[in-house]
Amino acid sequence: MPIDPELVKILACPADRGDVVLTPDGTGLKCLTCRRVYPIREDIPVMLVEEAIVEPDAPAKG
Image (cartoon, rainbow, N blue to C red; front, side, top):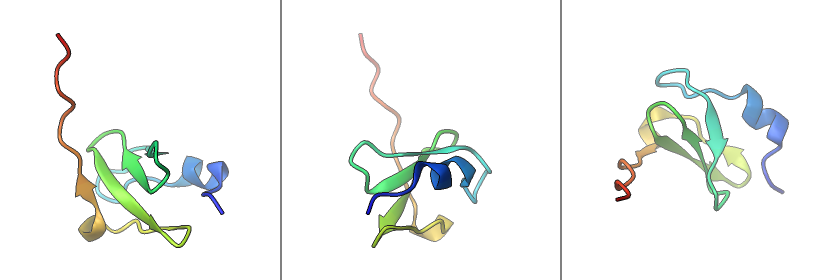
């Protein structure tokens, strides 16, 4: 069962209180501010800073 969009709307990054969005593959929630990605395990978001992975900056397009 996928994460309820209403739940995603009320969740916030525990590190900086930034908004989170579902990753394209649906396996995590990404903070739009600090780029931390929190895993989703068994349909439950694991919103612990220690469990997050920080995504690198996107490469510049040129």
